[in-house]
Amino acid sequence: MADFLPRPRGAHDGANLIRKPRDELGAVDFDITTDSQGLEVRRFTVKTLSRDASHASVVAKLRPDNWARKSDRESEIRYDLVWERGRWAIDDVVP
Image (cartoon, rainbow, N blue to C red; front, side, top):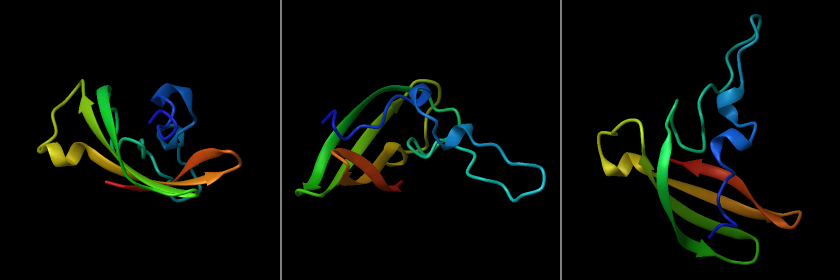
């Protein structure tokens, strides 16, 4: 399962680090990998939904450390992955 997982939040230059230039419309200003702003993930589980040689879908169940979500379903995020350049890359994130 570790092949599928994004690096920990602080280890990548994720969308949560993007800031809006003064003369442009805003960019994504949240962590797309956790569908949140400021979520600290205490632990998580990952289940493979489907996989072939070039595509995979997994669902991650996040267990937040610093807040509670309204339902457990809000902590489930599906990642659609593609195999490219010898590694799995996130193709789509479905909260």
